[in-house]
Image (cartoon, rainbow, N blue to C red; front, side):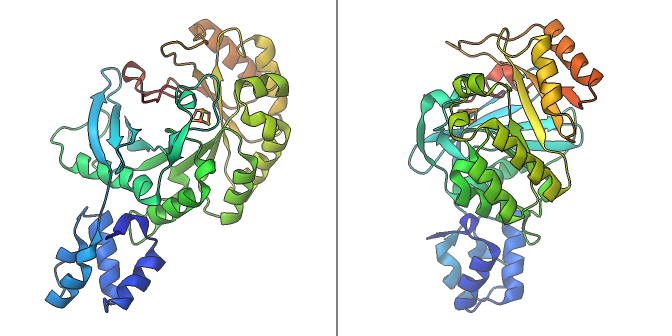
Length: 348
Ligand code: SF4
């Protein structure tokens, strides 16, 4: 059996060509799978019986939805998704005015072990395959199509934006990430514009360099959180391998290459990185860049060693950035009440 969702267009064309399926019909199959959400390409109308027989082994294979929880605060939905080997990951759907964003997982767990992150405590079990990454998108689009209700913020029935901000460090699963992006942006398939896909990283320098070389033009989000190299290495062990000074230089290069701002994620932890002095350090650090900053108050979870700052601290922090001409927004993570917010994703 071949999973349709794990194949790039070129690979499928080659395989289908070998089966005597024409180029035009291959295009039609792409449309039927990604836009019409048909699971059995072999049932495609217009195919001869011989053609249908040949396509018997080509299936759309996705993970399964094991359970879901809907946020009462903002209608975000957290899906627990079961993979073929029984492992579980989380995928979060976030409705907003004029868009439906899906937060994808790229790994089961994560090897980076950032001290504030629930996923980091799980350690890494394994990378997700291309079929499992693209499969999350197919699965949730299919789920959306079968729902009768509409979100209060929009009446969309298809995912419009993707963020690789779920479980895992996406650049640690580089090959599968890149192949998935190629499939998700393919004009024959979902045709998601690259700017509507954001890859988030804790600062994986090698991965950032390789991503730029791939020239996929996707957006980049850098989880920065603290400027001081020593403190950052404690908070985010990846900093010992890839110091922030080098990571930020690469982020500037990436921004120039895609001609768009890189998004800086700065989670505020009370008493750790939320003082007025920290805001000044951050402003100086980002001076002369076109980066945008998302200020995110920490979302707590059981046994966390960190606290959420007060709203006053948060507003104070932002006002210092604004005074220093740093573009910033306070982002309250969606799905807090269902454990779906930034840093809260984890499964036992
Ligand atoms: S914050 Fe991201 S990179 Fe760090 S442990 Fe969590 S999932 Fe991994």
